[in-house]
Length: 57
Image 1 (cartoon, rainbow, N blue to C red):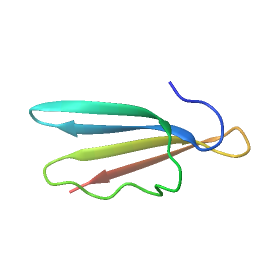
Image 2: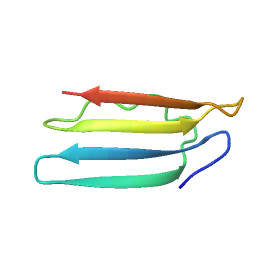
Image 3: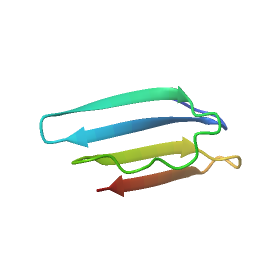
């Protein structure tokens, strides 16, 4: 779990497993595509909203 501006989680889904990481995103920006994976980034916005980016390759 991560809350507050600049905090978020990144999940990488693959056919043979997945991984998840939460904490400060810093200036990471949007996630890039990874081979044979779906990458999901959820980040806390400045005004209490959430930003979700989904990238597949």
